[in-house]
Length: 114
Length: 113
Image (cartoon, rainbow over all chains, first blue to last red; front, side, top):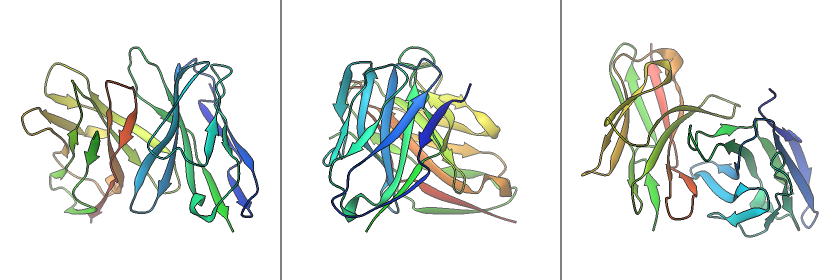
């Protein structure tokens, strides 16, 4: 199993550009989530999904969109990048049943918005 | 509001000494509680969890955590620290009403040789 994969690993955007961060998992996990990690702020939940076709907002959803058309994929879209979105982004997945909610994390995407 | 607090930004411990990393939570209902570790330039790795049952749970790399309902705490512990335990540690909680999993701000653990 590849686990949770994220692409790209690094990205530089200009203010106002859009892009999609890709996340895929091959463990048939129902639950997937996106976090951003900033110094001194820990991990903050952006969006999450409890299954295909179902998404919900986390703690910091503004400026980000998600969709979950398949169990495997959970892309995160930045519609109009802002410098405040400079961060490291992590995707995670887990079962909803046992072993409940033990999340597997991807390697992260380091995004810089200039 | 649902929240997780890690009151210490950094904890320094001499190698061989016991270590404790603190976590308190505020959620409605029965919490699912987790500890994760992050090594430099890596993603997070699951260490252990509390769902129900015994208040002392054991996890990977010799770590354990004690759930205390009355103090709403879930402190991470290890009897004898190793230099290789130096990393960033995160406490997390599943919010029962909406299935969100939220994290604390993290505690950097330095084990001094």
